[in-house]
Image (cartoon, rainbow, N blue to C red; front, side):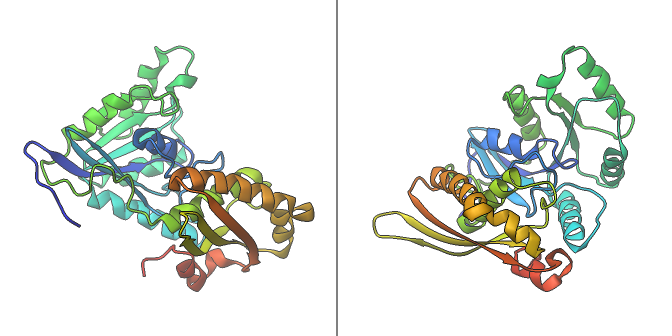
Length: 303
């Protein structure tokens, strides 16, 4: 990786943590201006640590969008938690995303316990303030969080409405060291395109499928080739845990699989800026979330 040195240029790493579904991916996408991290109403959608890059004249922030920190239930859960916790030791600043409330549940208490052990400065980012009717309540919600953790800074934002996100980046730069430009200005992620394509397909599946399937699916992109005319041919598998799930994913006469494919193809075309021919298949791998071999195959362990 070639690094450019600039005078008074700050650069460093910021980890986003928070309970599943607090809006980490939405915040990333608004800051970076392109759809990189998948978003879904269903929690635990970000499986691999997605690294995105924000650059302006002040410097460069490399964001690690970690899987939600939560208590693990299976090998996939353990992997996600370990990735999230190890990221906190590698970064210059931590952003803890929370929702506006005075109720601090077991999930937040668990995160607070982890953050208390880390020496890295923590910025509390209270997201979704657009949902608060009385804006005076926001201070009350922030005061409640002061009691559970020591924060370097606190900021209230709306990722969805892009409100106060500028103030948030200002606070992040405050804690970054002066350093090199790790990535070119136009770099927005270090994830391979194949992996992003897989995540976008998975997002569409999560949005369209019934509640009984949510996390028992993985997506693997088997091939991704560019034609001479600039069009991409992509072949991918949706992997599920049960035969009954396979039927639901395919749908009557292939209707559900077609919906997933069409939605994902549009997203991938927007990202690549090119036409895409997407072929999807569905495969059954029983209890893959508790199999280390399958987990490795689907990209959830460091090789």
